Structures are given as C-alpha cells and as structure tokens.
Length: 104
Image (cartoon, rainbow, N blue to C red; front, side, top):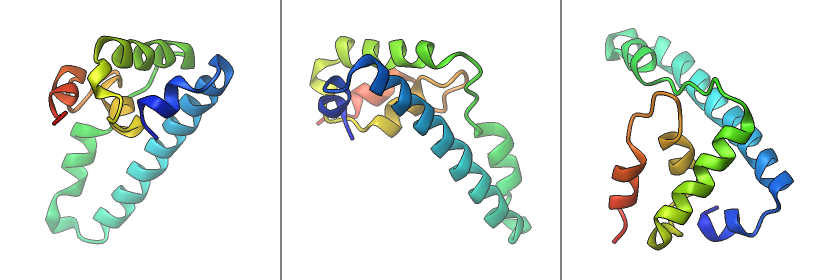
C-alpha cells in the first residue's frame, strides 16, 4: 500500500484506511509492549513510552496530511502508507521530510 494505492481511493475509502491504519498502530504497539514486558531487561517500556504514536485528531486531519505528503513529494509514491501514517502522527518518530528523503 503506497501512494499509488492511496491516490486511487475515494475520499471515503481514504478515511476508512486512516481508521484502519490507526487501529493497526495501536494493535502493533500494544502487542510489542506485551512482548517487551516478557523481557523487561530489554527496556521496551522506555521505548514504548517515548515512541508510542499519538493520533489525537479527527480522521480527516490525517487524511489531509497523507494527501499533502504525496502531493508535496510526488517522487515518494512508492513510500508505504504505514511510514506516512507514522510521520503524520502528532508526535512522529521521523518527520515526513525525513521519510521523503529515503526515496532512492
């Protein structure tokens, strides 16, 4: 799922994709935390607390931000939806500019 996929979606489908992406982030981080708790010496709790992506705005905000990413960085159409979701988080681990620079 990349920019070509995203741009082929209707507005309603994009909102559904955002909702699904947020759910996937929550599930993935929660699963990682549980796994990390089984190995407390590895420090996963600190990583979780520092890097847990916060998505506190309405779905439409993230839809616009993702659209903006792919418009501002047309060469980034092969950048995956998950990476873009991560960079539009309220507290991104990596900026969208940095994500766009990963294009080869």
